[in-house]
Image (cartoon, rainbow, N blue to C red; front, side):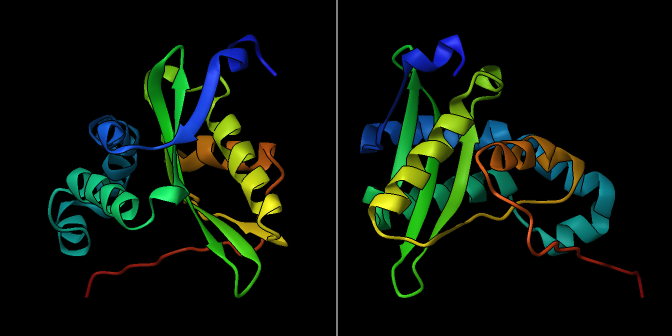
Length: 167
């Protein structure tokens, strides 16, 4: 545990947290969507990912919170919300699944993401889940996410690649 983890507080998200969650989502996914645009090219990117991707991602997290507030946590560092994580308990399959999660880029590398994942894994265990699942990209912008998941014990099982070609 690094020194900063003593100051980390993880709690259920509340409605007042939503603007900050939206902001963190936009900051965290900016390099991801920029990377997709660079790899795919402008035309394919706009066809495959139309609209304001950052606003749509923030809306996705907000809509999840509205539907499942008990499965949306925020993480505070020194009293400020610096991260969030969503999850689902798939009781019919005994699998807990980590969903959208992000850490303010200014706070990355301080154990916030790891603490979030560890908290959710504890929730999964307490709920009787047998397995935990998460998915992420194989592209370079997702390297920190993959490292975090591996740090808390996830192992890659099914790699996924998307191919495109111009016709």
